[in-house]
Image (cartoon, rainbow, N blue to C red; front, top):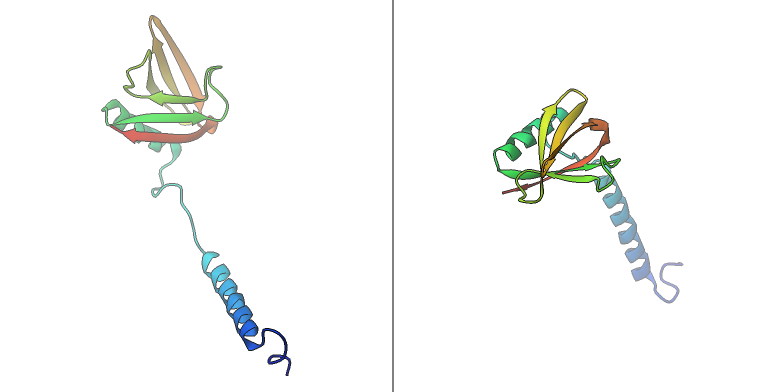
Length: 126
């Protein structure tokens, strides 16, 4: 028999069989895992309204990263009381876009951005 002959013998065959079974079990058990980005069925408008309410109440800082920069400075904007030179406030949340104001010194800029330009939300409880 070929199993008992050779340098490694039956131990090598048992080890290879165990590795093959482990590979089969691992690949079939991980195939059905589903991953969700958020636990609720909220759409982007509902999520933004919820986060704005928390930010306005002073409970969190809300960060929004845009796919295409809204200005030449950055594509990441932090909303809430961050005690810096400018203040960002969400003004309107509409069906397909939202608008926010940027106040710095005497200037106030209002920007409107479609939801399709939002890459991600991030938030930090205060």
